Length: 319
Image (cartoon, rainbow, N blue to C red; front, side):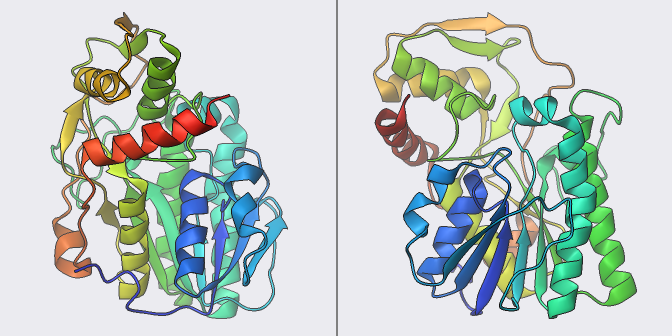
């Protein structure tokens, strides 16, 4: 059973709603009958991600940076804070913007939710676990993060966001929840955002070599975006404070992922090994016991199903 819509919302605010996951959240909420205000500054989000939503009843767009105080009308009963660069290409290009989104942005979104008496959901990440020494990772694990490494602007922004959300709940009684999202993929990703799935799909469709870093034995656990959105909304509806892992516990090596994408695209591409990025985690896999037990949620889309859908979207949207 997926309890995502066991609680109805009148009006939801989605910061970063023109981004990859944020735009899918906006769509799912609108489909459930919830009015949605999307807040985005297009620093990494894209207008085309929400173009199909512009004329839908109940949808409105506010162009604003969450790093500055903002407000919306009418009052909301759900605020989902998803505004942040999330791909390596973005947070390495926008390091201060990323830190601002996790600190000032989280504080401003919390203030909005508290003022409305709304439920607040923070999009955190599996990156808070760093290069984990526990495998799989459960929510009690504190992580192994390099605070001054190249990935730290994203990792530490999310870790600070979790601390700020917890403090706001303790000090002000704000109704908060934290979801730690593991690697999510699907339509609307950008081919050059630096993440494995869109990079491999873009390269395979173009007939280019697939660039696998290191020896390709490092693992990730890939969750199709529809499943991720279902988990987020299940956590919002349940009222669980969290943090709670939302991801797919099925691991795949980067080399096997590259081979699978070559097979599914029918590409003649070869595999080329490149230097592995600094602080690139060796393993990444969620323990989703808490989500299964409390939210009655688990992913249902297989890697092959999700990748076929993603590849089909990329075929239609390649530059």
